[in-house]
Length: 172
Image (tube, rainbow, N blue to C red; front, side):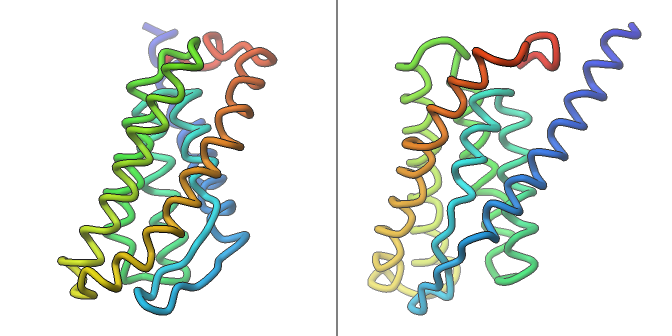
């Protein structure tokens, strides 16, 4: 019973620390996209690292909450959409990855990336009323964000798996 409580405490602590890391990495570089009032950032790298290393619950919390906090601090209109979209990105990446196979990591990334690009496209085009043409303008920036998540995030994740005893820190 004590070990289960300890594991839960560790999972919460890791989730909060990674949400802060997502917030910071999202805010470090912000390139505005005037057509949709959105911005290009590289927080997706930390979202994928969080999900691939620690699973769907941690990845979803870190991605959703961390990204929403970054939006609240600069672009608050997006925060509710970001909470759901980036949370789903982290959840999918974490649930699909098996923590061992590069192939599964790439499939997990692709699922999370698809959820992010499609989610923002739908939110911008319909829910936020920018229209399809404005939403299409942001698709290349969103693709760049998720590709950076793969190009940088997957190698970081694989290197960390080899160097730190993750199963002893927190289980997926």
